[in-house]
Image (cartoon, rainbow, N blue to C red):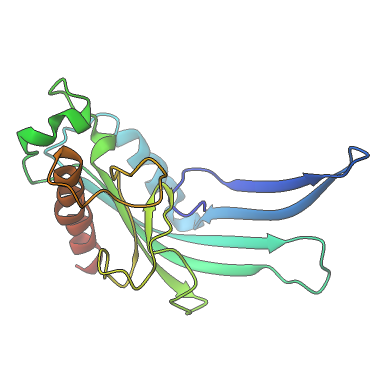
Length: 193
């Protein structure tokens, strides 16, 4: 769950009736050493850019997904390459301005998208394909996102946070189409080029 979050570790505990804590699972996200300086400089730069002047960053991440409590369980190291992009060359349609805060001033972070390619293990079916910062339960076989990468975007979700709103022809639908076509699309284009 930490693939697209700017956090280093998530730990899940259970508490026994006597109050003793037991670590059930730990996921650690580590940006490759060679990318650390670029990553921090990029995080500072996105605070000052204009939404119409997009910037991108490509970096490598290792995820260590440890399940504790079982001595024979070895952590699964996952190697990912992530492309993040903030901003868009495409103009924001007026009809979706309220999704950006309604004031006409938009935060660049609302124009943030990312794609991630999993190098190892090479299994393609066992990781979520769509994220709105956290994984969404949209099947990998979904026609909604048919790219060979995991995608992250600021989607407008339904109330249960289980699907991206695309059914109604309202501002949420139009915003999500914009996110998929422009933010995710431009980010993916940067990734493959």
